[in-house]
Image (cartoon, rainbow over all chains, first blue to last red; front, side, top):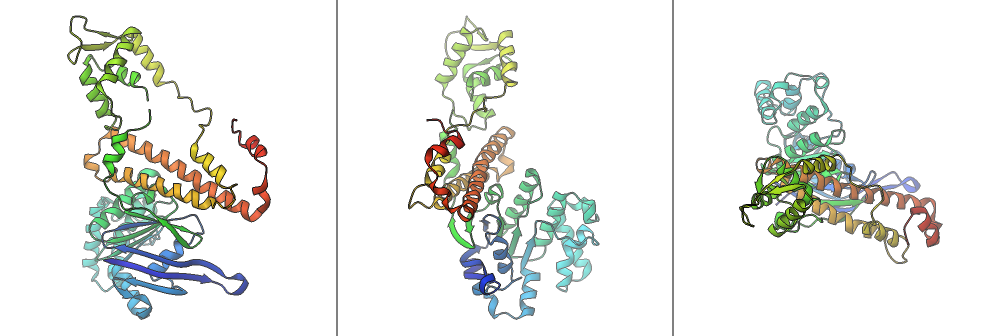
Length: 241
Length: 193
């Protein structure tokens, strides 16, 4: 079952001659446990799509369902609660709070949701341990490398009972080894049942996904076929000599 | 891929049998390069003829015949390792030619042609990436081969992305550019006739 579903979503900015159609009739779904990549060039509407999927912005027309619930029928408070509890966001520039340590950043969403500070911190610590960052828990963002900061931001996105992970160019500023580490963490979250949507212009990142959807000028123009019986077919032919 | 030099590299570790060489070759290349035993023996015979390996004369032909590298073989191997492969002239790339043809053909949407290839390449990359998923079963040689393949496919996709951006800008800025005569295009991109 789809945890996230966009039905005919359009987004128009401005009016009249300055009107910009950022998205036009976009259908997109992500099942629990599935990693979907949305690939497109700069200005293709990827980030708009992600902010609408995460209820940070409203579509001009069309519907968004998260966990089976129509966002258009939810109150502002309900949406805010859903964002805190169910959705994790990962941004290219990490968006960590500079004045908080790694573990404080990770446990913040739980504390905002009313979890007692001690309990929230121990949940945050557990996620950092899982991601191999236990020894960096008390470090502040400016004491961490780019790769470590992004791993902390992923820890913040998966802490608690998150069901949906939304990532915007999560390895944008990282080298390929750190980019791969980030995608392994996103994939690991999916294998635990989280639905994830990653938007990117990079094929190396998108290729970690179960399904890749191609966005051009605000429209979904294509998507990949599901993977099947692959290793055998790749390895049987071998490279051209 | 030089089977000849790969066999010399394996023999530089010490004497080996033909069958052993085949197994080790496949294992070291992540089993991505299948090699038949006939290829191994033909190559070994040529290496022996050229004085780059020696065999146990006493032993009969077959899997139990041992081979070792000679001093000339070691020199040949050292030279090969440090000689860059010839990448100086651009290959006659079928995909590049298709895009060049598509953007001038009436009734053909070059963006659709580009997307067909982009999707296929991404699907191939998904397959290679899927092989990397289980790190536990991922040996170093295989990891290097998979990375090389991913970067190769990625570079083709990057070219398609760049080509699409360039074509889009050209459509906006110079709508007349599609009527340039072919000879001019040929001169500009250096296509051989």
